Image: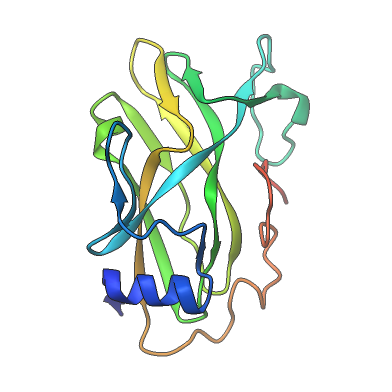
Length: 184
């Protein structure tokens, strides 16, 4: 299994629509960078967020999440309260090839502000908008900018395609179009 380069990512984005929309280079002027990098792709967060509703339940149970525990927001930025989190959605739609697995790491610009981005691996043959968990580990509110870089995706190609892909297993988050709460 090997890490894939910018040439491979560019080719797959164009030929297989692996990343839509695809930013060819790294946009940096006045924004948190996004787009194609040397060995990855810096994805953006969209303008869509789910924030915990004031007075939300004192327990978030992934087996029985209450949808009304969150407020839906559409904004140019999102403020995350201290020691809390929001859910976001990638701006890009991903179609992962059957022989590829991705790992996602938060951008250092946000990490330096105590912001942690958690995204599970994109499994072989998964497609959709990624739901992002964005945590503020600090003691002050933190600001997240929509349509700017939030995390870097690294692509690893296996020597052989997997026997059972995410699509084959009919994964519960396949082809998600919006921020998706936990499902069983």
